[in-house]
Structure formats: C-alpha cells, structure tokens
Length: 271
Image 1 (cartoon, rainbow, N blue to C red):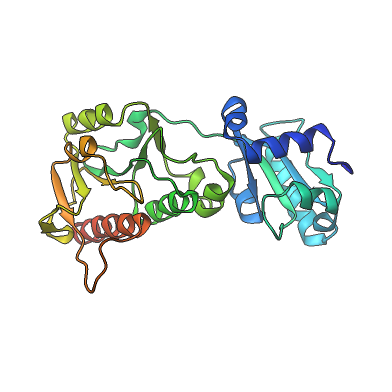
Image 2 (cartoon, rainbow, N blue to C red):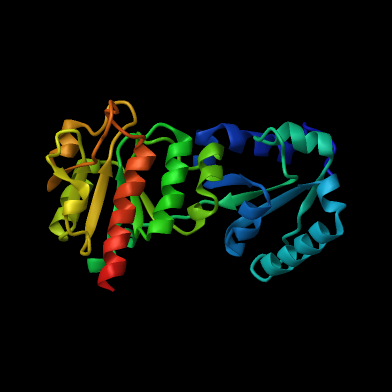
C-alpha cells in the first residue's frame, strides 16, 4: 500500500493532473471516479489506484478484481494499487474523491477518422476556453451522433481533469483531431463536400431552415469573442439562433447542442 505523498507514483499522478505539458509528454491522462475508470478501454488503462477505504468494500473489491483480470488479458503484469486514504485525498483533483482513479493512455485519431461520407456530422471548435464547456460538448456530441470533433490548437486542453469529468466517458468514444491550421482543415472539408455552418450574429436565416441530412459541420467560436473573421469567412452559410427578450447570445455549449440535435432530428426523420 502506498502511504506517502513522496511516493514517485503519487508525484507522477500530481504532475499529470496539474500539467498539460506532462500529459502531452507521457501521452496519458488521469480519470477519477468509478464510471470513468470502469468505462475506460482495457487496452488504454495503464494503472488504477484505489483508496484503502474504497477497496475495503466487498462489492468494490469484486469489481476491481474483475477489472484487473480483464486488463491482464492485454497487459499480463497489470495490478491495481491501494493508497492510504489521506494520500489519495491529497492527490485527487476533486473535493470529495470517490476513491478510485486511473492513468489512461490518450486515444489518437487522424483527421480522416472524423469523416464518414454523407453521414459526416462534425462539431468544429475555435479557441474554446472553458474546460467544462468543452467536455459538455463532447458528451452532447456523442448523444447527438456527431462523427467527430475538430479543434484548433488554442482550444483548452481536452485532457484537463475538469474537461475529462465533463465528458462523462465520451472522451473514450468520440473521435477528435486538434489541427495546427484550422483554416486549412476547413478548406479540406469543403473539398470533400462537407457543408460548413457558422453560428454567427450576422446570420440572417434561422438554424432550422437548412438541410443537415448530408455531410455537415457546425462552427462554434470562443465564448467571449465568437468565431474569428478568418474562420467564419470559410463557412458556406451563417446561421442564426433566435433570441427573445434582451439576450444577445447563448453559451457556446448550448448553441452547439441546439445545432447538433437539429441535425440529429432531421436525420432520424429521414431514416
């Protein structure tokens, strides 16, 4: 059992939780909570840590042994580590730790993995800054059936602990790609026949007036500044979300949800 914060594994956990540079270097990230740990693909789990009190529960112990057996089919030397409660709490990124966390290998995708022919439905993000927003968009995107999420490199780190928690497991299942040049990637999408729609205050037509049953992508900009002119100009169409009262704009995550689910509604009706 690990009983000290100075243990090298605990130091590494702290580094992975607090430093994007370290996550990128090791190509792995930390997930916390039973749902996030037990939903992780077995082949991507590198290490599991549980608090002493968590393991003391018979049901938890049984589930841990089943997980260990499953992972060992891929990684024969795998075993979970027990950590003293006080040490676990000090390392955890949450105020009320559930008592279980894991180090998970980052999934990797290529740009082409986001494309599914006429079924392509992309969420395209420019400089989103709120970790919770980004994680919620992944979760909503999975629910709405997107084929992938395209982000520029100034979007907040996807593997930030708060982002990971907000995905509620969707990080394991939604393909994504961080592009070095968003404008160039948008040009490539247009060449492949993907219709691009920008949620923009200059939009004249309402968002539900268009056909999203073929390959499409929705552009969502920074929470404070919206889309840059360079990115917005590459959209085929500006679309507008109606605003009543004195509201000028919606949360980026809410806007994304409305657009993705409109596409989902149309595709269900067409099926």
